[in-house]
Amino acid sequence: MDLTQLEHLKSDDRLKLKALYNNYRGAFLNFGKSLGADDSLILDVYQEAFLALRKKAIQGKLENMQGSLKSYLFGIGKYMLFDALKRESKTIAMENPLHVVNEAVEGIEIEPSSELTKEQRLLRTFFVKLGKKCQLVLTLFYYRGLTIEEIVEQTEYGNANTVKAQKSRCLKTLKQMMN
Amino acid sequence: MMDKDQLITKFLTQSLSKEEQLRFDALLLEDPSFKAEVKLLEDLNKVAEAEDDVMAREMVAGFEAEHHGKKMASIWWVAASLALVVSITYFATRQGAPDTQILYTENFEPYRNVVHPITRTTQQKDLKTQAFAHYEKGEYREALELFEKLYETTNTPHFLFYKANALLQLNRPREAIVALQAHLKTKDTLTQKSHWYLAMAYLKLDDVVNAKKSLERVVAQNKYNVKKANVLLKTLD
Image 1 (cartoon, each protein chain N blue to C red):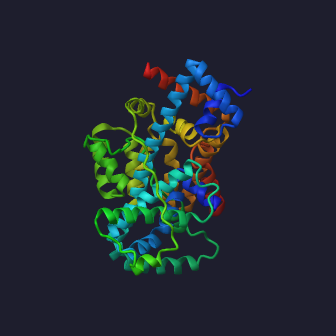
Image 2: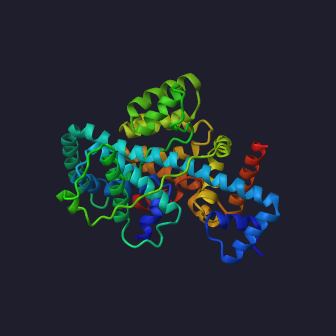
Image 3: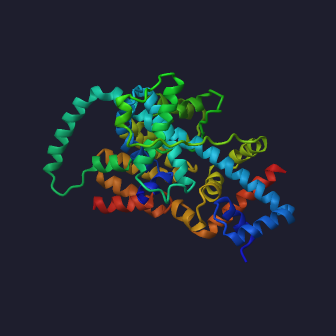
């Protein structure tokens, strides 16, 4: 897998993400049409597949993956499209020649995220109240798994000590809010 | 030995070694405060994921909305193509001069909404929510009208900043400059970004002298888009 593409996918850089999104959009539209789906469904699915792919990348599940980012994206998209078409009861016959055309792309199933528990929903309200700066540092450190040094590189914080101080302060405030 | 915080961080990123996992499991049994900390950070991880999902979903919806905006604007393509031929001819005659319009396109991106997050759960439909919802969907004409109203009624400086961004997106750089200069006279968290957008507006107007002045201020402030400003300054020299 192309590591630069993977980095762009994980980043918050809107322009880089948009470039990736637009890069495969046209090809996915054609791909979806060949399966008999209409444009609006294909584009809905493309957005979902792109989001699922980004999440996989953030969670570090694509690093050792064989094959290209595109094939993985299309694999997720194919599974979602089949699922959506099935729900719309547009059954796709196995002998459908269009299906054969796309045999090269293997469908990949994505498990949906679990719902937040009651406690987590409460924590979320406090998390939002922390403000954008705290949310960013905590998200980068705990969810994205970035090191302090990587956070310095990706944000406008000047050095590691500032990031560390900010992280501790935010966590402390969060704990105070909960008590 | 690794401290407890590091142990929890490694647990969250699923990177504990076998030995660390044993110590982690033991602490979980023996130390109630450790257990509580793990629970909190696991929950925080999940909450951050949920918030990140919302942010990413809005961003991707924005990318898609831009395509539909482009479709609507397709009738202008003929006119735009003609303008492009004229400008290519113009720039071709100015050997070595950087193409400010290309630099503008490569560097300008409307600043994201950081002051009023629109989430699927946002129920209130007040003016501010409507304004930022339009802005995030790329409906800059509607957003501009509301930002103007909001600034008139509240005098909150960040509306000037977003108004300028909408104006730039609507290809009205002169008015954007006026708004940004007014914004620079105030002090809010976004004013450090105004010099960058001022540079973008001057680039759009092909005013290299003022674009460079603004970029030099971006560099001097050393806060926002410093690397990009340095690259642009080199290109413009």
